[in-house]
Image 1 (tube, rainbow, N blue to C red):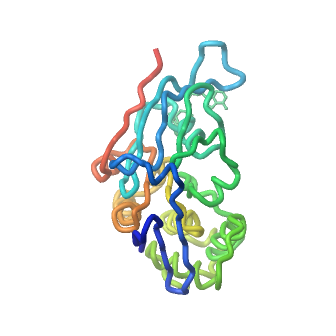
Image 2: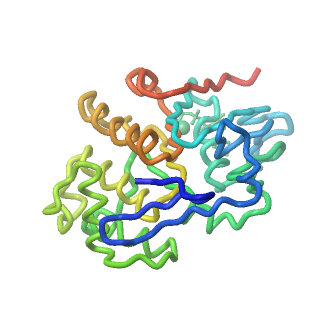
Length: 251
Ligand SMILES: Nc1ncnc2c1ncn2[C@@H]1O[C@H](COP(=O)(O)OP(=O)(O)OP(=O)(O)O)[C@@H](O)[C@H]1O
Ligand SMILES: [Mg+2]
């Protein structure tokens, strides 16, 4: 659970790992709305596209800490493209993205991806022949953070997303879709990021499982002060979130 202590958010897990999110100078001067990520007039054109063929045009959205958001739009409106920009996989062709007061243009994007944001995919993207806990530990290792008792920490995260500890040693290919998505969420939390972004995370799940997964995302936002962004076509997701942003087809 996150506590506001002076200007830092301190999270402590059961094993005593401390996660301190220091606020930068820019963050201290933040607006009262507590915005974590700002997309400012962003446009994006893929390198092989024609001159005026934009996948995204002039998008401006703000995302606050402690809130859960849906981004929706018809197929081809640029939802996945927008997540690629937010996650620093692509850079804006025009405009910019500000995270915790800093432009992504001036950030080490590998570090940003491995420690500031957690990503969850529709198809889970886990390594099927590794166990649930090995998948989570792999992501802890990639973050480069010093994390004590990684296996216990992985189990703690699994329990947090509703998976029994006994699943830790089970190979991912022996888990149901809903269970795999829980492992993927636990993995995205392994280095305690400030923001979770998810591309159609419930697209392959039944409605009951979707509702359970949404509960996890909601708790992360409302109880752990994380910013959660979900790209979705699902009405159930849209009914759950704090705010919906719509992407429209570019004329
Ligand atoms: N790698 C790429 N190279 C060129 N154009 C691309 C590439 N990826 C996507 N596009 C184009 O960019 C536009 C937006 O695609 P994007 O995948 O972001 O849409 P989407 O809203 O996520 O759609 P869906 O709901 O079907 O997943 C589309 O016109 C698509 O053809
Ligand atoms: Mg998409």
